[in-house]
Structures are given as C-alpha cells and as structure tokens.
Image 1: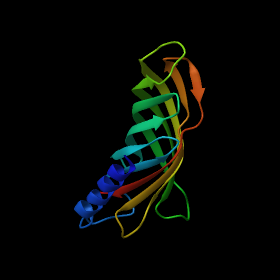
Image 2: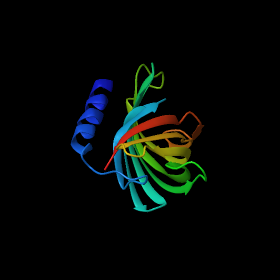
Image 3: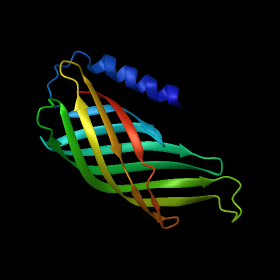
Image 4: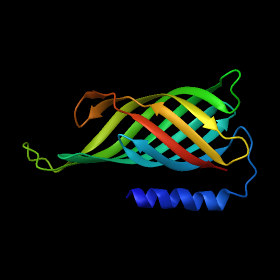
Length: 160
C-alpha cells in the first residue's frame, strides 16, 4: 500500500513539475504519513482558506479502518518566514471499521467523527513541493464515543 502512495506521489511530481510555482499554491496532492497513512488533496478557496481532503487507512491487530476526512482550514502567515504558515480548522470524518477477532462478534461498523486540526504548512519557493505537519484530534461519535488524540501526521504534496 505504501508503494502505491509513493507511486502516486512520484507520478504527480512528474505531471506537475513543469507548472510554475509561487510562494502560495492553489492545489496540492500527496501522501500523509503518521498514525494513519493515506492520500491528501488540499485546495485553496481564498488566499487564506483551504479545504483538505484525506483518504486514509489505519490498521491494528484487532481492527482496520478506512476513513475519508474533510477539513476547512484557516491559514495565517508567520512574519519573517516566507512560505511558512500556521493553520487551524475543523471538519468531519466518515468511514468504516473492520473488526478482527472481536469478542462481541462484530463484523464491521460505520465510523463517524468530528475533527479539529492545528498545524504548520510550508511551500518551497521555486519547487512544486509542500510540507504540512499537523495534529488532527477527533471526537469519535460512532461506532463508540471516544476522543482520539493520535492524529499527528506529515503530509508531503506536489503543488499545482
């Protein structure tokens, strides 16, 4: 699965390498690495407002999850650091949980959560590369009510 994500990232780089870049970008596609890994697509609605979509998979010994997350983010410049911005926002997740060896004899469940995000976003000047490091805690509403603070991730994207 990781090879698939790296292949997507490399193909995106080749496809968009000829695109002229600026300190700010409109769209970015790449991979998210962390507690859960996946594909991420960020698009700016305004110069400081963005939507970030994350499709990811998390696998544990007793379950695996498939998630689609949508986040609305507000980006703010950091004085004296061109290309670096901090951001915050929120959104939600819809997905499914597949249980393995569950003592309650469950097969799978709907996953639903309300998510927050706080992070740093850096766009390399003169290169179509964007890095984001963020924390994405989630208040899980289904299948069980719980708080998940493990959402730290690094996103590596190609901008276009």
